[in-house]
Every structure is written in structure tokens, then in C-alpha cells.
Image 1 (tube, rainbow, N blue to C red):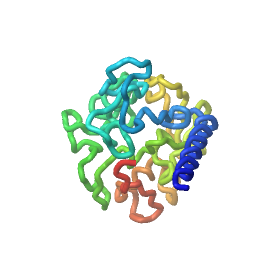
Image 2 (tube, rainbow, N blue to C red):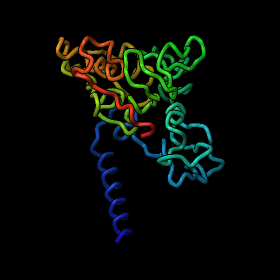
Image 3 (cartoon, helix red, strand yellow):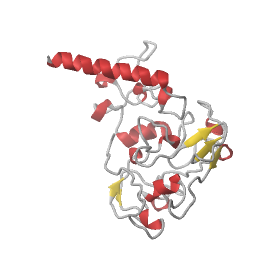
Length: 246
């Protein structure tokens, strides 16, 4: 009976996964059809050969997920620890947006960079991963993880910001002033245009005192509460600081 239950559960997961890949729209990476399990996970934490049957298996990140980290196995069969896994592709690589320290790509990063501790990205200049800190204007101490702000399994929110806690809506191709963000275009693999400053417009569909500004401002308010008006607990959109890994 227990084995039958496990088989039924696995079948349900596979069916739902297939349906999600078919029905979802093309959006930002790690969402819909670009949410690829083996980019981040590996079954049984083993990989005996590459996709084409050759060996050895790389231990450094590859754009198509054809690699396996060292020192495992880890929680949730991740190829590396949570922050390390994100930075494996998002630090110093040209096939994905570079979010740590100096920029390896040729476009301006509108969101700045995570601090690396090396000038000109000293720790005190921005968000720092892993350290236990109280955010400026905040009241809670937290150990910052990438997944505190971004959904690792994607969503319909702008740049996979946590859409359940504080959705940031966006549209592509034609501007919709009821949405928070307008992307003039988005083409898989075209990093220079996808993330270029000229490609992204920020609307403010709820620019009233009651709503206290844009959805992005509310998102930031989740940790930096005291910087957003006098209503410390009014209209608060909290970031999920409880998730350490997933």
C-alpha cells in the first residue's frame, strides 16, 4: 500500500511537471519552460557521465546544467549549497546575469550588485549574503539568502521576485500602465538587451499616499520598513526571511 502511494505521488508530480512545461508562457529564466530541474538538482546526487556519454563530469557550472558539485550530497539533492548554487551561474559568468561584485557582462546593472567585500564592492555598500544582520530600517535579524527575495522555482512576478509575498507585475512588448514593470523585449539568451537599462521601464500604477508607491518599493519595505513613511506596520509587505534554503 505504501509503495503504491509513493508511485501514485510520483506519477502525479511528473504529470503536473509536464503540464506546467506545456501550459506556461515564456517568461524570465527559471520559469515555465526554462525551469529545468537538472540545472540545480541531480537525482541521487550522482552523475557518472556527461549528456553525450563522455567523461569526466565537470565540477564547475555549465550553461546547460551538465555538471555536478563537489562535497555532496546536500539538502534537496542540490548540486551545491543554496547561495553557492545561485552564484555558480550568477557570479562572473557571461551566460547568466552577474549579480556579485564586478560585472562580467557588458550592460549596466540597474539593480547594482551584491557586495563581495572587495573594493569598490565593500560589505557596507550593499546586500551581503550569509551574514547575520539587521537590515537598515528593519527590526529583524536575518541571514540573507538569494531565495529570501527570488523564487527558486519561478513565478509570474518580475525577475522571479517572490510573487506570493509581494507580487511585482510586468508586461512585455506593449506597455500596460496597470503593471509595475514594462520590458520592451525579452529574448532567451540575449542578456545585453534583456537586462539593459534602455529595455526596462518602471511604471507606478498605485502612486498614492495610501498605497505608498510602487510594488517594488513595497517589496523593499519588507526588510527596510522604517524608510517607507510613518506607518511602520501599515500596508506592510513582508519578505519571507524564514526560508534558509528552499
